Amino acid sequence: MEGNPLDSVETWQCVGDSFEKFQDVICTFFHWNCAQESGGPDFQWQMNLGVLKSQEDRNDPQIHMARLISTSGFVQIQTTASHDVIIIMPVKGYLNLRRGTMTQKVTAGQAMIYQPMGETHVSHIADGQTCEAYIIKVSFSWVQRFLFDILQLPVERDLRLGPVIDLGTPKARVLSRLISTLCSDAFTFQSRDLSPSLQHRLVETFSHLLLESIPHRYSDRMQTTKAGPMPNYLRLARDYMQREARNNPSMADVAKAANISVRTLETSFRAHLDVTPHAYLRTMRLKMTRQALMEGRDGRSIADVAAAHGFPHAGRFAQYYTELFGESPSETRRKGPLAL
View 1 (spheres, helix red, strand yellow):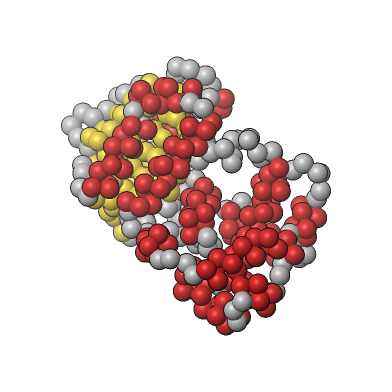
View 2: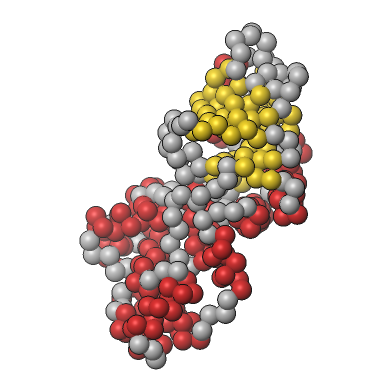
């Protein structure tokens, strides 16, 4: 292996002739298991690996990327449920995705996209003497926050993805080129030197292009959000919520600030944001709480921070928080202060 140890670098390149070493590296990097497709002793392989981080979570990569080459096929196996978004683009050979009793074949000109919410097997099948694929894993917590910033509504964990992307469409062709670039030898080798702000921009750009290029649960809503003008009274209601979020205002107070009835407030939120005003306000308060936990400047307990943002019941707060961000409040606090 070239470069620094796996636990201390942001990108590295590795080669070998042992399947056991290949398994060790890929499992460490992606948190998967894998098995050899055939029992032969000859298994030459190369991996070029890298990560991109956001400025919000400098301790945890938001995107893992890899170019994998081997002389024979293998099976990647994930038994632990996860909502992370996995994209695999075969370059040489093809893929078989198996979940439960369903198997999906993915060939050149296509890519695979899925969330491994149950036991998932992906077979990498060699074409002649070579098996090659680009792999990108995007943190679900990032995707969830990214979609919330666009849609301003709570995001479900199941994004209803793929599992096959047709790379023949114009947007998907751009996506495939970006995947190829991120997983290329030149980029993975140089990405360690990218500034934090540039890494953050790349994470945003890839996420936005991905979510605009493929169908998912929120595709229609993303188009509606861009196309549909929001009434001024709804903007007034949102602004009032933003100012008074920590005081947890009633819907009657919000409606009064926007000079509309509570009924109009509720119907307008559903029509334009596909969420109730109460759920919208709660999500806003959760984001403020998360910001305070990540800053961690005053040493208050998690319960005190939650109460200061309108969550007096610790158990209910933890449930809402985990559902929205994919991690517990204590996990957020352990990450330490934000890298600004």
